[in-house]
Image 1 (cartoon, one colour):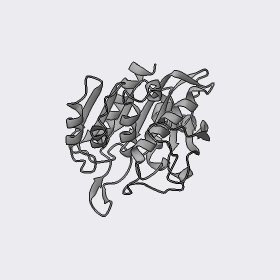
Image 2 (tube, rainbow, N blue to C red; image 1 turned 180 degrees about the vertical axis):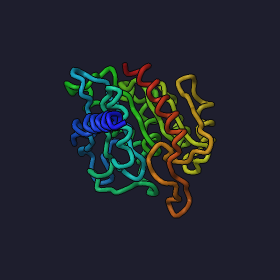
Image 3 (tube, rainbow, N blue to C red; image 1 turned 120 degrees about the vertical axis):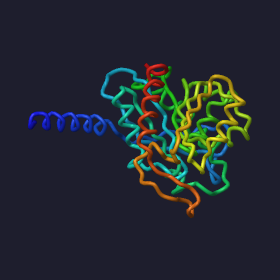
Image 4 (cartoon, rainbow, N blue to C red; image 1 turned 180 degrees about the horizontal axis):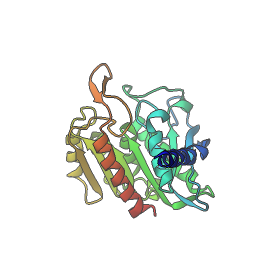
Length: 266
């Protein structure tokens, strides 16, 4: 029993070291696409991100990760970086707000979805020129507002976004893509809860009806917004929206993401 406990501890320690050792902060230039302005004050600027590299040598597959409207909270989303690194896939978690001196963007009227679609393709262009990344194996993942940006980035009319192999959209605001008449150029799997009253499953069902087989939609019974993150159940935005983890749905989502990795990034 003691040997088993020691073995378990060492396994967990090694996993922690793998996930922690390769993290670094990076800076890269923003490139125009949907918009010509970096923000409301400037036409150019830099973005920052947290880069997680797997231990394997050579050019590795990567995922560009786009956070939600509350900003990049590594405490909540690091689990995805660790998940991908364990699969031999690197992650670039883009921070859209800190370099623009914003804490969040959940309620203002600026064109954040289009701006952040450009953030995603800017990250793609930077990654594709790094010696440690395979430019032919870069995918896009987003949560909430970041998932809305993902749908715009993978629109058929977005030439740079065609460099992504596909997308993983967690509880996307599909109404944004429908309003922009998005037609997906690459395969996307979208996962959302039927108890999500912030970005609704019904809006994604309507969007799915306008797409071909490239758009796969998975709806989880009982899951709310942010079901995949380790956050307690609560009401946010003045009590309007329910968020909180749903472990069973998260476990299924992880298996689907692993299948996506095996099919698109290996």
